Image (cartoon, rainbow, N blue to C red):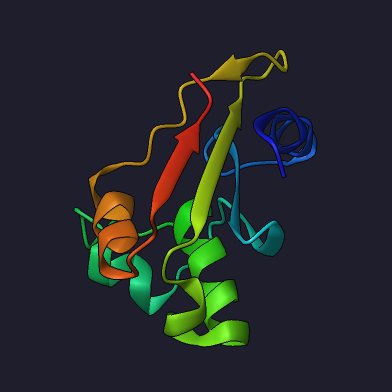
Length: 117
């Protein structure tokens, strides 16, 4: 799934605290999972997050959680993560993964990361 398609999905996502962010995890031309920012949390959000009090589930970690549930950690290794963020007006915005998401990316050995800017 390319960044333009992810951006279209992000535009329709209600978002968390105004952040309309969508991520896809892909491997060998196949989409493993799509994640979105959510108010709901997950133990991995707390594990990799910087602030244990603000542990909203980020789109990147949401995609990782979903893919691991289906394919296992080994199935995620070597994959590509793409992240898109849309502003309220629908224009693209910087979606570079935060420190916590970067730690998750490293921990699950995701090979490549692309994001909107």
